[in-house]
Image 1 (cartoon, rainbow, N blue to C red):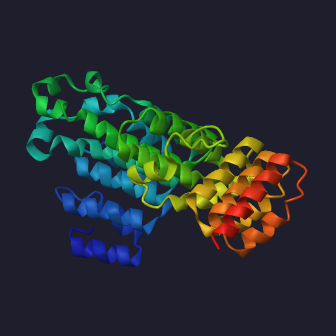
Image 2 (tube, rainbow, N blue to C red):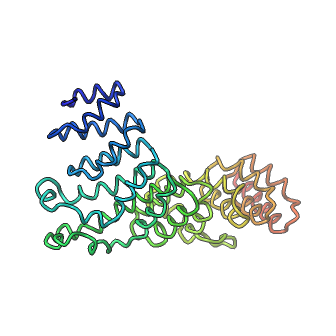
Image 3 (cartoon, helix red, strand yellow):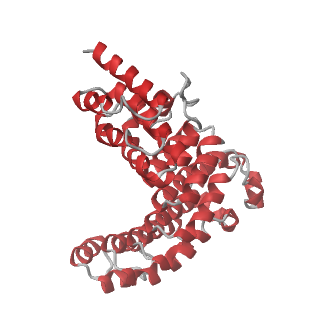
Length: 346
């Protein structure tokens, strides 16, 4: 049976599943067990799941967290329900006060729900969506009533609860971005953007929406302003400036999902997506915007013409000239204005 860290490294390098599983049972060797659990995650063999799941309730709190991370790396769906269980605040009520006081700070106890949320995102199973949404919807002032009674005797720990709740909420936002889908996108807008006052959480939610891509574009557009800005209006988010302020340093990461939306979203959303691409100023959007000049919806064609005026280039000029005879007057006028702008700028 492996008893040393050097042997764990050897077993990992060899991909020796049986040897690493044996190391999980070494008594009084915490570092060996932790490194073995970590190595099992790196090896990625689904046969280790059965041995790692019970460790989520091990008396060694750090081993619990390492095991959750390992389960996420392995990515087997059989770990979903045990990991979801650690998103329940009442599970934290089982914390042992003596062990926390002797061996850990209170923050260590929160590493497991954070790791569980991240692992669920890696696994990508839709069963985790609603539990993650519940965390995202949680108020930062909640949770104290669900904690152990003895916590009232540790006011410094009680005061830290909102900080830890935000940390789990951010991990939940990341996980929802990985899992994707309309429900995840809706929740990210409703709870991650619309109701959030924490810029780190807003940033994570924006990044998650970008990860979801075209499926999230309607929700993303709603968050960025709602309706087409048309007559001189602009997004109530102040778009690029506010996204940067929220921590998304490169708004052009939105180019691809918005470009996809030009072909996949409904008519109104296609128009807003075209306008947003113009605001981004990313030349990678030229071809999708040129194609959007042939969209069946006049709103999308109008917005594409305005966007091309902001991107410029010979491709934009040629494309705009081709729609000067568009059947819709607004589109024709938009193309004329765009050409005038481009020619004036040289």
